[in-house]
Length: 266
Image (tube, rainbow, N blue to C red):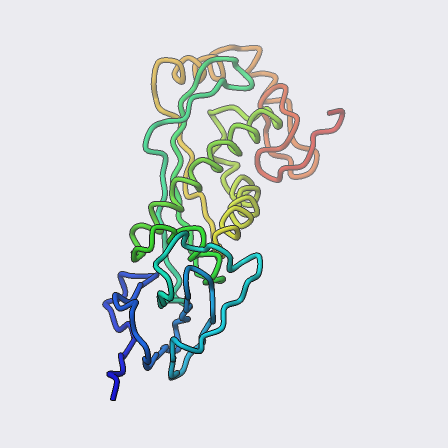
């Protein structure tokens, strides 16, 4: 009687995608836990997707689905080779991100160079096992939580930087009060992050920018001096208020930095 292989993954939770090392089985028992999905590939094509349960797999009669999603998922493989990948789902990962180096841009109000740092958190979860396997496991290797977090972190920081610069420019927000716009900027970045991660079969459950801070360098100190020591600027700021929430505004403000409403006449 031919030997029957047992395929399962009971790891320590570090792996999100686990590739079973045996690719030459004839008959195997596949056990998929409640928080997992398994993908069976034959000759590099997706043959089946398994939810939680116990399955008997016979490699000799495995059909192959030749559709747009299954063709050539993992490139060239040996003839009649079967591979089983187990993907851990229903596991929310809390990812902390931050700008490793300050982002450089020009202050929209004072036209001086400024450097900003930002950091926050993100909760992600695997939604589509097939897309995740296609996009991040192309080298036929295991995918750890750390590797996925590092991959997502780079994409998130890139989107955050671009949106902060766009937000500050469009609303003429100075580095001196950008921290008051953290919530609004977070709301603007969230759909961008969600759309980006969906391409990899990942959903973003939460996204938060916890702080945006200007580097206290010579340029930023000069901006602070212009805002506080110039009598004309100070008097204009004292006399200018948001018509919606009555917050004191900086001169030439087009949007309220508290409620976000457009200022009359802008």
